[in-house]
Amino acid sequence: MIKTVFISYDQAHKEGVLEALSASLCRGYTLIPGVCGCGSKTGEPHLGSHAWPAMNEAILTVCEEEKVAPLLERLRKLDKDNPMLGLRAFVWNVEQTL
Image 1 (cartoon, rainbow, N blue to C red):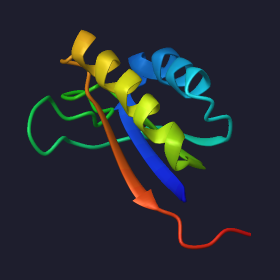
Image 2: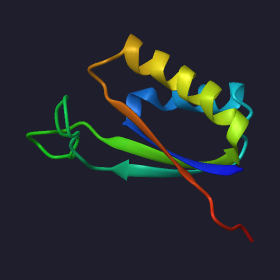
Image 3: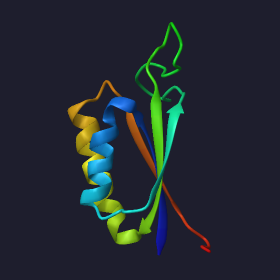
């Protein structure tokens, strides 16, 4: 089965997220720079404003199901090592591809 992984993270995590993708053999991805938002549980807003200057980025990757668990484990470690920056990942099924 093919999965989509959406990763939203503080821009300071960029190199670590790209490393996690590479090490997990998730080659293809789409990077979305300049993403603003606020986490639902912890952390400060990332709005790119004077009051909340931090910014996020997001990546979408579509990969085989067996690559998801290793990717998420690497992302968990990255988030645990830097908990105040913010990093979240969400996974869903791909119904069709072209």
